[in-house]
Figure 1 (cartoon, helix red, strand yellow):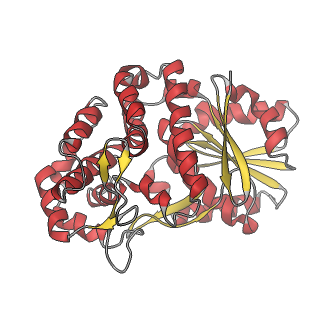
Figure 2 (spheres, rainbow, N blue to C red):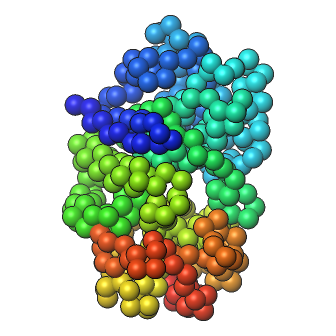
Figure 3 (cartoon, rainbow, N blue to C red):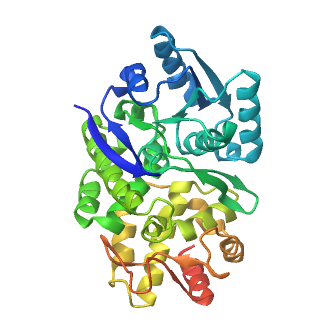
Length: 365
C-alpha cells in the first residue's frame, strides 16, 4: 500500500509517495504529476547503473522520450562546475522548457539536480526519486536546491520544490551500510526536535533499519517525511520555524568542512547534534542528560567517528564564520529543551558565545 503525504510549497501542494516497489510505477506517476515532452534523468555514476538505467528502460517502454545525464559520485561533485556541465549537456541535447528533470540518487544528486532544474531556462519541473535514507527523509523534501563552495556547504542555491517525490524502500537494500547509518541520523534528528516517541521507536528499530527491512524502513521514512513536511509547510523559505531543522547542522557542517570531508555528513551531523545539546545544557536551557541520551541513541548506528579527533577546533570556528545561517555576523544554534522539543524563548535559534562553542568542540572532538 502506498502512503501519500501532501507538502505545501509556493502556493501549491506536491505529494511524497512512499511504497515498496513504487519505482516500477514511475511512468504512470509521471503521467499524473509531471507530464512532459521530454525527460532528463540526472544520476551519479554509481547509482546510475543500479537504478537510473532501469528508469530509462521503464520510461522508454511507456513511449516516453528520455535520456541520462551522469556525473561522478560523491560530495566533491556538488559544485558549480558540475552544475555548469549538466546544464550545458541539457542544452546540447536540445532540452527545452517542455522538459522535466528526474533526479535519481542520494542527497548530492537531489540537491544538484534540483539546482539544475531551478535554473535551467529559468526553471523546469522536477521529480525526485531518492535512493538513500538521507535523500528520502531530508534532501528530497522541502524544495531546497544547491551546491557547495570553498567556503562551505550549500552556500549557492535556490528553492525549487518538486512535482512529486517517489520513495521506494526497496532501493535501500543496495545502499552501503555506512550510508544507511548516516542517513538515519536525520531521522533521529526529526525525533529529537519534534517527537520523543518517534525517537524511541527509532532506537527500538535501529537494527531493522540498518538492515533496510522494508516494513520498518517504510514506517520510518513516512514518519520523517510527515514531520519534515509539517515544518516546511509552515515555513517554506526558512524565515523562522523551519530553522529547527538545522539542529546539529551548524556545527555539523563546520565539522564536515574542517575535516576536508573525511568525516561523513551523517557522522558530522550526529556529532553536531550531541555538541549542540551540550551547548544547551551549559546554558541551562536543555534538560540535563539530553546530550548523553542523544549520544547513546546515535551510537547504535555504528557511525565512523575516527577522523573527528583529527579535526582542528580553530578550523571548525573558521568555517562557522561563513555559515549561511549567520545573522548580524554571528552563528546561530538550534537548542533543545528536551528530546522531542526545541527551545524557543529567543526564537527558534539563538547566538551562543564563541568561547563556549570552542570549549564544547575541544571537549568532544
